[in-house]
Amino acid sequence: MSDIAAGPAAGFEDALVVVDLQNDFCPGGALAVSEGDLIVPLVNRFFGRPRFFKVATRDWHPADHISFEARGGLWPSHCVAETPGARFHPDMHADRADLVISKGALKDAEAYSGFDGTPLAADLRSRGVRRIFVCGLATDYCVRATALDGRSEGFEVVVLEDAIRAVNVKSGDGDRAIREMLGAGCALMKSVDISE
Ligand code: VGL
Ligand code: ZN
Image (cartoon, rainbow, N blue to C red):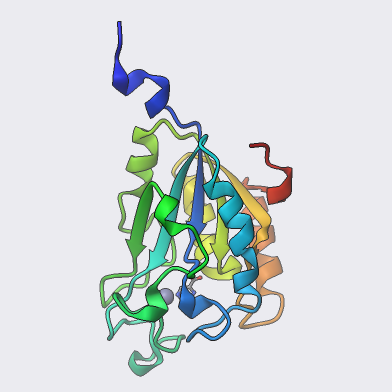
């Protein structure tokens, strides 16, 4: 009796969701997050672990995106689809991702969350995922929004506190985002404390 769909190969309890570890959010990029590149080795350690369903999200904007200063938005132009700034950090083992989710691709809509306008929740459910471990950039924007939506979608959410970094447009934004995620029922753990 073999039913592949119900077998262990399809059954991932846990997923890793790496948020926007892209050149433009790392030092030297258009919207650089301080120390953003320092999380790459922590992320790569997880990419070697078979028990995780591995997701990488990417900010993937059209050149005239609503969030850009040219259109009255908050941000300099960043992560324009198909440009070098939108590529994953060169040292990240992005080829090991099981799923890449592009977001923010509609020119008139902001989408900070990896769940916003994407098939992420359905894909995770179809794999059997119940718990997501969230890391990446930036704590106070896309990590926050992805973690909060993960809770709303009914997943257990663990935020990997050593594998996130904040933009901190206003000082304290990163810490406020962490308190908000905790208030929504997310857990905080260090990546070094997660077993293989
Ligand atoms: C992000 C600002 C603008 C993020 C994306 O990935 O946190 N922040 N677009
Ligand atoms: Zn963006």
